[in-house]
Length: 451
Ligand code: PMP
Image 1 (spheres, rainbow, N blue to C red):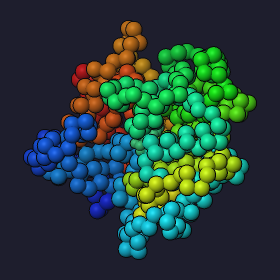
Image 2 (image 1 turned 120 degrees about the horizontal axis):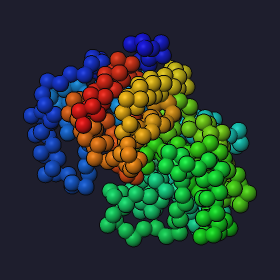
Image 3 (image 1 turned 135 degrees about the vertical axis):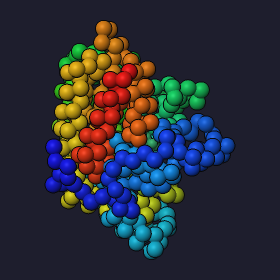
Image 4 (image 1 turned 90 degrees about the vertical axis):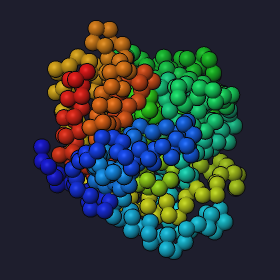
Protein backbone atom coordinates (compact mmCIF):
# COMPACT_ATOMS: atom_id res chain seq x y z
CA UNK A 1 0.00 0.00 0.00
CA UNK A 2 1.56 3.27 -1.10
CA UNK A 3 1.99 6.05 1.40
CA UNK A 4 0.87 8.80 -0.94
CA UNK A 5 -1.62 7.50 -3.50
CA UNK A 6 -1.59 9.14 -6.91
CA UNK A 7 -5.02 10.60 -6.29
CA UNK A 8 -4.11 12.11 -2.92
CA UNK A 9 -5.93 15.42 -2.89
CA UNK A 10 -4.29 18.58 -1.60
CA UNK A 11 -4.16 18.74 2.16
CA UNK A 12 -6.15 21.43 3.85
CA UNK A 13 -5.42 23.39 6.97
CA UNK A 14 -2.40 25.37 7.99
CA UNK A 15 0.24 22.97 6.60
CA UNK A 16 -0.39 20.33 9.22
CA UNK A 17 2.14 17.52 9.49
CA UNK A 18 0.28 14.32 8.67
CA UNK A 19 1.32 12.52 11.83
CA UNK A 20 -0.42 11.43 15.00
CA UNK A 21 1.28 13.08 17.96
CA UNK A 22 0.26 12.92 21.62
CA UNK A 23 2.04 15.42 23.86
CA UNK A 24 -0.41 15.06 26.78
CA UNK A 25 -3.00 12.59 27.98
CA UNK A 26 -6.42 13.42 26.54
CA UNK A 27 -7.73 15.86 27.46
CA UNK A 28 -4.62 17.95 28.03
CA UNK A 29 -4.76 20.89 30.46
CA UNK A 30 -5.88 23.51 27.92
CA UNK A 31 -8.63 21.26 26.49
CA UNK A 32 -9.71 20.34 30.02
CA UNK A 33 -10.08 24.02 30.87
CA UNK A 34 -12.17 24.69 27.75
CA UNK A 35 -14.34 21.60 28.37
CA UNK A 36 -14.95 22.75 31.96
CA UNK A 37 -16.25 26.03 30.52
CA UNK A 38 -18.41 23.98 28.13
CA UNK A 39 -19.94 22.13 31.08
CA UNK A 40 -20.86 25.48 32.66
CA UNK A 41 -22.06 27.25 29.52
CA UNK A 42 -23.54 24.57 27.24
CA UNK A 43 -26.34 22.16 28.20
CA UNK A 44 -25.30 18.56 28.79
CA UNK A 45 -27.76 17.47 26.10
CA UNK A 46 -25.17 18.69 23.59
CA UNK A 47 -22.62 15.93 24.09
CA UNK A 48 -19.18 15.28 22.62
CA UNK A 49 -17.34 12.13 21.63
CA UNK A 50 -13.70 13.20 21.81
CA UNK A 51 -12.57 15.08 24.95
CA UNK A 52 -10.45 17.71 23.21
CA UNK A 53 -10.98 21.25 21.94
CA UNK A 54 -10.07 21.46 18.26
CA UNK A 55 -7.95 24.34 16.95
CA UNK A 56 -6.97 23.19 13.45
CA UNK A 57 -7.65 20.34 11.04
CA UNK A 58 -6.59 19.21 7.59
CA UNK A 59 -5.73 16.13 5.55
CA UNK A 60 -6.37 13.33 8.04
CA UNK A 61 -5.45 15.19 11.22
CA UNK A 62 -7.27 17.20 13.92
CA UNK A 63 -5.06 19.30 16.23
CA UNK A 64 -6.23 20.17 19.73
CA UNK A 65 -5.59 23.11 22.03
CA UNK A 66 -2.63 21.34 23.70
CA UNK A 67 -0.89 20.52 20.43
CA UNK A 68 -2.02 16.90 20.24
CA UNK A 69 -2.55 15.69 16.67
CA UNK A 70 -5.33 13.10 16.32
CA UNK A 71 -6.08 10.83 13.37
CA UNK A 72 -9.48 11.78 11.95
CA UNK A 73 -11.59 8.74 11.02
CA UNK A 74 -14.89 10.62 11.37
CA UNK A 75 -14.83 13.80 9.22
CA UNK A 76 -17.13 15.51 11.72
CA UNK A 77 -19.75 12.83 10.86
CA UNK A 78 -19.11 12.56 7.11
CA UNK A 79 -18.85 16.28 6.40
CA UNK A 80 -15.25 17.24 5.58
CA UNK A 81 -15.00 14.72 2.75
CA UNK A 82 -12.76 16.92 0.56
CA UNK A 83 -10.55 17.60 3.59
CA UNK A 84 -10.89 20.13 6.38
CA UNK A 85 -10.08 23.73 5.41
CA UNK A 86 -9.27 22.60 1.85
CA UNK A 87 -7.36 25.52 0.27
CA UNK A 88 -9.79 25.88 -2.66
CA UNK A 89 -12.78 25.91 -0.30
CA UNK A 90 -11.13 28.30 2.15
CA UNK A 91 -10.28 30.68 -0.72
CA UNK A 92 -13.84 30.56 -2.08
CA UNK A 93 -15.26 31.30 1.38
CA UNK A 94 -12.89 34.24 1.92
CA UNK A 95 -13.62 35.72 -1.51
CA UNK A 96 -17.40 35.50 -1.02
CA UNK A 97 -17.21 36.88 2.53
CA UNK A 98 -15.42 39.94 1.17
CA UNK A 99 -18.19 40.52 -1.43
CA UNK A 100 -21.42 39.99 0.53
CA UNK A 101 -22.41 37.65 3.33
CA UNK A 102 -26.20 37.65 2.98
CA UNK A 103 -29.07 39.19 1.08
CA UNK A 104 -31.63 36.40 1.62
CA UNK A 105 -32.23 34.48 -1.60
CA UNK A 106 -35.97 35.11 -1.23
CA UNK A 107 -35.32 38.88 -1.25
CA UNK A 108 -32.45 39.41 -3.72
CA UNK A 109 -31.37 36.18 -5.45
CA UNK A 110 -27.75 35.58 -6.45
CA UNK A 111 -26.04 33.39 -9.01
CA UNK A 112 -24.13 30.99 -6.75
CA UNK A 113 -27.35 29.48 -5.32
CA UNK A 114 -28.58 28.88 -8.86
CA UNK A 115 -25.23 27.35 -9.85
CA UNK A 116 -25.41 24.93 -6.89
CA UNK A 117 -28.96 23.99 -7.95
CA UNK A 118 -27.80 23.42 -11.53
CA UNK A 119 -24.91 21.24 -10.34
CA UNK A 120 -27.20 19.12 -8.14
CA UNK A 121 -29.77 18.78 -10.94
CA UNK A 122 -26.98 17.50 -13.19
CA UNK A 123 -25.20 15.24 -10.67
CA UNK A 124 -28.05 13.43 -8.88
CA UNK A 125 -29.24 10.14 -10.44
CA UNK A 126 -31.84 10.24 -13.22
CA UNK A 127 -31.83 11.96 -16.63
CA UNK A 128 -35.25 13.60 -16.07
CA UNK A 129 -35.82 17.36 -15.60
CA UNK A 130 -35.00 18.36 -12.01
CA UNK A 131 -35.09 21.34 -9.68
CA UNK A 132 -33.32 22.03 -6.38
CA UNK A 133 -34.13 24.11 -3.29
CA UNK A 134 -31.44 24.86 -0.69
CA UNK A 135 -31.68 24.78 3.10
CA UNK A 136 -29.35 24.80 6.13
CA UNK A 137 -29.26 21.30 7.60
CA UNK A 138 -30.03 17.72 6.73
CA UNK A 139 -33.09 17.72 8.96
CA UNK A 140 -34.43 20.84 7.26
CA UNK A 141 -33.94 19.26 3.84
CA UNK A 142 -35.85 16.15 4.97
CA UNK A 143 -38.68 18.31 6.40
CA UNK A 144 -38.96 20.11 3.08
CA UNK A 145 -38.88 16.91 1.02
CA UNK A 146 -41.87 15.69 3.05
CA UNK A 147 -43.67 19.04 2.63
CA UNK A 148 -43.13 18.88 -1.13
CA UNK A 149 -44.26 15.24 -1.40
CA UNK A 150 -47.43 15.96 0.58
CA UNK A 151 -48.27 19.00 -1.50
CA UNK A 152 -47.68 17.08 -4.75
CA UNK A 153 -49.71 14.01 -3.81
CA UNK A 154 -52.36 15.60 -1.62
CA UNK A 155 -51.77 12.71 0.81
CA UNK A 156 -50.60 12.75 4.43
CA UNK A 157 -48.91 9.46 5.38
CA UNK A 158 -45.15 8.95 5.22
CA UNK A 159 -43.24 5.68 5.61
CA UNK A 160 -39.76 5.43 7.10
CA UNK A 161 -37.75 2.34 8.04
CA UNK A 162 -36.46 0.51 11.07
CA UNK A 163 -32.98 1.81 12.03
CA UNK A 164 -33.57 4.97 9.96
CA UNK A 165 -32.18 8.34 11.02
CA UNK A 166 -33.42 11.59 9.52
CA UNK A 167 -32.70 14.33 12.09
CA UNK A 168 -33.64 15.96 15.37
CA UNK A 169 -36.44 18.40 14.48
CA UNK A 170 -39.98 17.38 15.39
CA UNK A 171 -40.94 15.79 12.07
CA UNK A 172 -37.51 14.21 11.57
CA UNK A 173 -37.50 12.82 15.13
CA UNK A 174 -40.77 11.13 14.19
CA UNK A 175 -39.09 9.69 11.08
CA UNK A 176 -36.06 8.54 13.10
CA UNK A 177 -36.29 5.04 14.56
CA UNK A 178 -34.13 5.05 17.68
CA UNK A 179 -35.56 6.39 20.95
CA UNK A 180 -32.33 6.89 22.91
CA UNK A 181 -30.80 9.39 22.57
CA UNK A 182 -32.76 11.00 19.73
CA UNK A 183 -36.43 10.95 20.83
CA UNK A 184 -36.78 9.92 24.45
CA UNK A 185 -38.88 12.47 26.35
CA UNK A 186 -39.09 14.87 23.38
CA UNK A 187 -42.57 13.93 22.12
CA UNK A 188 -45.32 14.19 21.13
CA UNK A 189 -44.14 13.60 17.59
CA UNK A 190 -45.58 14.58 14.23
CA UNK A 191 -48.48 12.32 13.18
CA UNK A 192 -48.96 10.15 10.11
CA UNK A 193 -45.48 8.61 10.21
CA UNK A 194 -45.34 4.81 9.77
CA UNK A 195 -42.39 2.46 10.12
CA UNK A 196 -41.57 -0.46 7.86
CA UNK A 197 -39.04 -3.27 8.36
CA UNK A 198 -35.64 -2.66 6.74
CA UNK A 199 -33.52 -5.14 4.83
CA UNK A 200 -30.66 -6.04 7.21
CA UNK A 201 -28.94 -9.01 5.54
CA UNK A 202 -26.60 -9.80 8.44
CA UNK A 203 -29.51 -10.12 10.87
CA UNK A 204 -32.59 -11.08 8.83
CA UNK A 205 -31.10 -13.46 6.26
CA UNK A 206 -33.67 -12.33 3.67
CA UNK A 207 -32.97 -11.57 0.02
CA UNK A 208 -33.70 -8.04 -1.18
CA UNK A 209 -37.01 -9.00 -2.87
CA UNK A 210 -38.11 -10.97 0.22
CA UNK A 211 -37.34 -8.06 2.54
CA UNK A 212 -39.12 -5.67 0.15
CA UNK A 213 -42.24 -7.84 0.09
CA UNK A 214 -42.24 -7.89 3.89
CA UNK A 215 -42.07 -4.08 4.03
CA UNK A 216 -44.62 -3.54 1.23
CA UNK A 217 -47.12 -6.00 2.72
CA UNK A 218 -46.88 -4.28 6.09
CA UNK A 219 -47.39 -0.82 4.55
CA UNK A 220 -50.30 -1.99 2.39
CA UNK A 221 -52.05 -3.61 5.35
CA UNK A 222 -51.30 -1.02 8.02
CA UNK A 223 -51.34 2.25 6.03
CA UNK A 224 -52.69 1.63 2.52
CA UNK A 225 -50.67 2.62 -0.55
CA UNK A 226 -53.30 5.23 -1.51
CA UNK A 227 -52.70 7.13 1.72
CA UNK A 228 -48.94 7.38 1.37
CA UNK A 229 -47.41 10.64 0.19
CA UNK A 230 -43.82 9.42 0.44
CA UNK A 231 -41.46 6.64 1.36
CA UNK A 232 -38.15 7.93 2.71
CA UNK A 233 -35.06 5.76 3.03
CA UNK A 234 -31.30 6.08 3.34
CA UNK A 235 -29.79 3.93 0.53
CA UNK A 236 -27.19 2.87 3.10
CA UNK A 237 -28.34 3.65 6.63
CA UNK A 238 -25.96 5.88 8.58
CA UNK A 239 -26.67 6.34 12.29
CA UNK A 240 -28.69 3.09 12.33
CA UNK A 241 -25.57 1.01 11.69
CA UNK A 242 -24.27 1.40 8.12
CA UNK A 243 -26.84 -1.16 7.07
CA UNK A 244 -26.50 -2.00 3.37
CA UNK A 245 -29.79 -3.43 2.09
CA UNK A 246 -29.73 -6.70 0.16
CA UNK A 247 -29.61 -6.44 -3.65
CA UNK A 248 -32.97 -5.69 -5.17
CA UNK A 249 -34.57 -4.30 -2.00
CA UNK A 250 -34.42 -0.62 -2.95
CA UNK A 251 -35.37 -1.31 -6.58
CA UNK A 252 -38.51 -3.19 -5.56
CA UNK A 253 -39.53 -0.46 -3.09
CA UNK A 254 -38.97 2.16 -5.78
CA UNK A 255 -41.07 0.22 -8.33
CA UNK A 256 -43.89 -0.16 -5.82
CA UNK A 257 -43.79 3.59 -5.08
CA UNK A 258 -43.97 4.37 -8.82
CA UNK A 259 -46.88 1.98 -9.35
CA UNK A 260 -48.81 3.59 -6.49
CA UNK A 261 -48.11 7.30 -6.99
CA UNK A 262 -45.93 7.49 -3.86
CA UNK A 263 -42.96 9.89 -3.91
CA UNK A 264 -39.75 7.85 -3.38
CA UNK A 265 -37.24 9.92 -1.37
CA UNK A 266 -33.61 8.89 -0.93
CA UNK A 267 -32.03 10.54 2.11
CA UNK A 268 -28.42 10.88 0.94
CA UNK A 269 -27.44 13.35 3.66
CA UNK A 270 -24.72 10.98 4.93
CA UNK A 271 -24.08 8.87 1.80
CA UNK A 272 -23.91 11.68 -0.76
CA UNK A 273 -20.94 13.34 -2.44
CA UNK A 274 -18.33 10.64 -3.11
CA UNK A 275 -18.59 9.14 0.37
CA UNK A 276 -19.52 5.66 -0.88
CA UNK A 277 -17.16 5.65 -3.86
CA UNK A 278 -19.94 6.99 -6.10
CA UNK A 279 -21.17 10.56 -6.26
CA UNK A 280 -24.43 9.25 -4.73
CA UNK A 281 -25.10 5.88 -3.10
CA UNK A 282 -28.30 5.50 -5.16
CA UNK A 283 -25.98 4.75 -8.12
CA UNK A 284 -24.68 1.62 -6.39
CA UNK A 285 -28.16 0.13 -6.42
CA UNK A 286 -29.33 1.55 -9.76
CA UNK A 287 -32.19 3.55 -8.24
CA UNK A 288 -33.39 6.95 -9.45
CA UNK A 289 -35.27 8.51 -6.53
CA UNK A 290 -38.00 11.08 -7.19
CA UNK A 291 -36.42 13.35 -4.55
CA UNK A 292 -32.91 13.28 -3.01
CA UNK A 293 -31.95 15.07 0.20
CA UNK A 294 -28.31 16.10 0.64
CA UNK A 295 -26.23 18.03 3.20
CA UNK A 296 -22.98 17.20 5.09
CA UNK A 297 -20.29 16.71 2.39
CA UNK A 298 -21.94 19.18 -0.01
CA UNK A 299 -20.17 22.29 1.33
CA UNK A 300 -17.10 20.95 3.16
CA UNK A 301 -18.36 22.02 6.59
CA UNK A 302 -20.45 25.10 5.85
CA UNK A 303 -24.13 24.61 6.72
CA UNK A 304 -25.92 23.81 3.48
CA UNK A 305 -28.52 21.23 2.47
CA UNK A 306 -30.67 20.54 -0.55
CA UNK A 307 -33.75 18.85 -1.89
CA UNK A 308 -33.32 17.87 -5.54
CA UNK A 309 -35.90 16.08 -7.60
CA UNK A 310 -38.32 15.74 -10.46
CA UNK A 311 -39.26 19.20 -11.66
CA UNK A 312 -43.01 18.52 -11.61
CA UNK A 313 -42.85 17.39 -7.96
CA UNK A 314 -40.53 20.21 -6.87
CA UNK A 315 -42.85 22.73 -8.56
CA UNK A 316 -45.93 21.53 -6.66
CA UNK A 317 -45.53 24.14 -3.94
CA UNK A 318 -47.21 27.53 -4.34
CA UNK A 319 -44.80 30.51 -4.61
CA UNK A 320 -43.48 31.45 -1.18
CA UNK A 321 -44.22 27.99 0.25
CA UNK A 322 -40.56 26.97 0.45
CA UNK A 323 -37.55 28.83 1.79
CA UNK A 324 -36.06 30.30 4.94
CA UNK A 325 -33.92 33.28 5.89
CA UNK A 326 -30.56 31.58 5.47
CA UNK A 327 -31.25 28.70 3.06
CA UNK A 328 -28.55 28.73 0.38
CA UNK A 329 -26.45 31.34 2.15
CA UNK A 330 -23.91 32.81 -0.34
CA UNK A 331 -20.83 31.78 1.68
CA UNK A 332 -22.16 28.22 1.97
CA UNK A 333 -22.90 28.22 -1.77
CA UNK A 334 -19.36 29.43 -2.56
CA UNK A 335 -17.99 26.60 -0.42
CA UNK A 336 -20.29 24.11 -2.15
CA UNK A 337 -19.24 25.20 -5.64
CA UNK A 338 -15.57 24.79 -4.67
CA UNK A 339 -16.27 21.41 -3.05
CA UNK A 340 -18.31 20.17 -6.03
CA UNK A 341 -15.44 21.17 -8.34
CA UNK A 342 -13.08 19.08 -6.18
CA UNK A 343 -15.51 16.13 -6.10
CA UNK A 344 -15.80 16.20 -9.89
CA UNK A 345 -12.20 16.90 -10.89
CA UNK A 346 -9.69 15.94 -8.20
CA UNK A 347 -10.02 12.16 -8.03
CA UNK A 348 -12.00 12.15 -4.80
CA UNK A 349 -14.42 9.40 -5.85
CA UNK A 350 -11.50 7.13 -6.79
CA UNK A 351 -9.84 7.94 -3.47
CA UNK A 352 -13.03 6.89 -1.61
CA UNK A 353 -12.87 3.56 -3.44
CA UNK A 354 -9.19 3.10 -2.50
CA UNK A 355 -9.94 3.90 1.13
CA UNK A 356 -12.77 1.34 1.10
CA UNK A 357 -10.48 -1.35 -0.32
CA UNK A 358 -7.78 -0.60 2.25
CA UNK A 359 -10.21 -0.60 5.19
CA UNK A 360 -12.06 -3.74 4.09
CA UNK A 361 -8.78 -5.57 3.49
CA UNK A 362 -7.38 -4.71 6.90
CA UNK A 363 -10.64 -5.37 8.76
CA UNK A 364 -11.21 -8.70 7.03
CA UNK A 365 -7.75 -9.82 8.16
CA UNK A 366 -8.63 -8.93 11.77
CA UNK A 367 -11.98 -10.73 11.47
CA UNK A 368 -10.18 -13.93 10.40
CA UNK A 369 -8.52 -13.96 13.85
CA UNK A 370 -11.39 -12.60 15.92
CA UNK A 371 -14.94 -13.98 15.87
CA UNK A 372 -16.22 -10.96 17.79
CA UNK A 373 -16.29 -9.15 14.44
CA UNK A 374 -19.62 -10.41 13.13
CA UNK A 375 -19.86 -8.34 9.97
CA UNK A 376 -17.85 -5.88 7.89
CA UNK A 377 -19.89 -3.87 5.43
CA UNK A 378 -20.20 -0.63 3.52
CA UNK A 379 -19.00 1.04 0.35
CA UNK A 380 -16.12 3.40 -0.32
CA UNK A 381 -15.11 5.46 2.69
CA UNK A 382 -18.28 4.47 4.60
CA UNK A 383 -17.29 1.18 6.21
CA UNK A 384 -18.47 -0.42 9.45
CA UNK A 385 -17.65 -3.28 11.76
CA UNK A 386 -20.43 -4.96 13.75
CA UNK A 387 -19.29 -6.47 17.06
CA UNK A 388 -21.14 -9.51 18.38
CA UNK A 389 -21.00 -12.22 20.98
CA UNK A 390 -19.35 -15.02 18.95
CA UNK A 391 -21.56 -17.69 20.57
CA UNK A 392 -24.96 -16.08 20.17
CA UNK A 393 -24.48 -13.36 17.55
CA UNK A 394 -26.01 -10.89 20.03
CA UNK A 395 -24.84 -7.28 19.63
CA UNK A 396 -21.90 -6.40 21.90
CA UNK A 397 -22.28 -2.71 22.72
CA UNK A 398 -19.93 -2.88 25.73
CA UNK A 399 -17.03 -4.19 23.63
CA UNK A 400 -17.74 -1.58 20.94
CA UNK A 401 -17.70 1.28 23.46
CA UNK A 402 -14.51 -0.03 25.10
CA UNK A 403 -12.66 -0.32 21.77
CA UNK A 404 -13.78 3.15 20.68
CA UNK A 405 -12.73 4.64 24.04
CA UNK A 406 -9.30 3.02 23.83
CA UNK A 407 -8.76 4.29 20.28
CA UNK A 408 -9.76 7.83 21.24
CA UNK A 409 -7.37 7.75 24.22
CA UNK A 410 -4.62 6.89 21.72
CA UNK A 411 -5.51 9.86 19.51
CA UNK A 412 -7.73 8.19 16.92
CA UNK A 413 -11.12 9.79 16.36
CA UNK A 414 -13.49 6.83 15.99
CA UNK A 415 -17.28 6.98 15.86
CA UNK A 416 -19.80 4.33 16.89
CA UNK A 417 -23.38 3.92 15.68
CA UNK A 418 -26.18 1.41 15.33
CA UNK A 419 -29.56 0.73 16.88
CA UNK A 420 -27.81 -1.68 19.27
CA UNK A 421 -24.70 0.51 19.75
CA UNK A 422 -22.45 -2.27 18.49
CA UNK A 423 -21.02 -0.71 15.34
CA UNK A 424 -17.75 1.13 14.79
CA UNK A 425 -17.98 3.20 11.65
CA UNK A 426 -15.19 4.60 9.53
CA UNK A 427 -15.87 7.91 7.79
CA UNK A 428 -12.40 9.35 7.17
CA UNK A 429 -11.88 12.51 5.19
CA UNK A 430 -11.03 11.49 1.63
CA UNK A 431 -7.89 13.61 1.96
CA UNK A 432 -6.37 11.19 4.49
CA UNK A 433 -3.21 9.31 3.46
CA UNK A 434 -2.74 5.55 3.67
CA UNK A 435 -0.17 5.85 6.48
CA UNK A 436 -2.65 7.46 8.87
CA UNK A 437 -5.39 5.02 7.89
CA UNK A 438 -3.10 2.07 8.55
CA UNK A 439 -1.94 3.52 11.86
CA UNK A 440 -5.58 4.04 12.90
CA UNK A 441 -6.37 0.39 12.11
CA UNK A 442 -3.20 -0.77 13.93
CA UNK A 443 -4.41 1.07 17.05
CA UNK A 444 -7.89 -0.42 16.69
CA UNK A 445 -6.39 -3.91 16.33
CA UNK A 446 -4.39 -3.49 19.53
CA UNK A 447 -7.39 -2.02 21.37
CA UNK A 448 -9.55 -4.98 20.36
CA UNK A 449 -6.88 -7.51 21.33
CA UNK A 450 -6.64 -5.88 24.78
CA UNK A 451 -10.36 -6.37 25.51
N1 PMP B 1 -30.38 12.29 7.39
C1 PMP B 1 -29.32 11.49 7.53
C2 PMP B 1 -29.25 10.23 6.73
C3 PMP B 1 -28.29 11.84 8.42
O1 PMP B 1 -27.22 11.02 8.56
C4 PMP B 1 -28.38 13.04 9.14
C5 PMP B 1 -27.30 13.49 10.09
N2 PMP B 1 -26.59 12.49 10.73
C6 PMP B 1 -29.53 13.84 8.96
C7 PMP B 1 -30.49 13.44 8.07
C8 PMP B 1 -29.69 15.14 9.70
O2 PMP B 1 -28.77 16.07 9.24
P1 PMP B 1 -28.43 17.36 10.13
O3 PMP B 1 -27.70 16.88 11.33
O4 PMP B 1 -27.59 18.21 9.21
O5 PMP B 1 -29.73 18.00 10.45
